[in-house]
Image 1 (tube, one colour):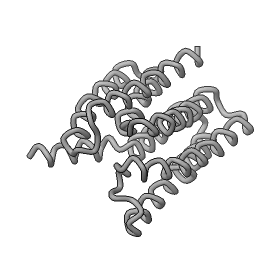
Image 2 (cartoon, rainbow, N blue to C red; image 1 turned 60 degrees about the vertical axis):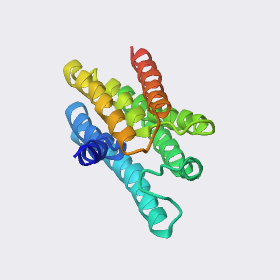
Image 3 (cartoon, helix red, strand yellow; image 1 turned 45 degrees about the vertical axis):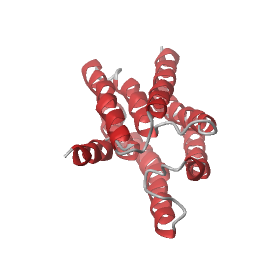
Image 4 (cartoon, rainbow, N blue to C red; image 1 turned 135 degrees about the vertical axis):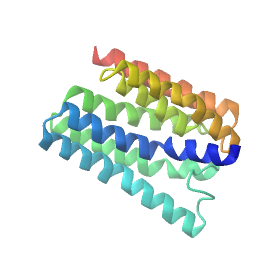
Length: 191
């Protein structure tokens, strides 16, 4: 039962899922429809889908042990594509002069990925916890209550990662710390 619940929570908290859902909802709430569609296609089509494809193919070929890319060594090479894609999307958003929250939200995700890659040299930080913690800071300006809920969701999410043996306590805490630092930096930068 505990394993089943942990899988359920972990799947819901997969950053590719939570970021995609947030992006679609937030963009269509805050941007003109044409801009929201453009940014959604960039984020989901230009980052999320290619990462899903790379992860799926990697598992099928045996390059990755699982879809979470839980092996520290495997993860180091996996980081290259998301970092490259987020870099390109960030540049496009700045060059097309998109809204400040959109540009800096994606830039923050890029910074979080780069920091996680650097930290991965020493410890395999939890991207599930890191990105969901960061996501809470993206949600706060839209709804403090929902933002607090997203932040609190990081607690059972961290628990699920431990139960599934995808991370240690230190890796979960390092993910939360990265998400907090980058998220708080984003809020300060948007003021």
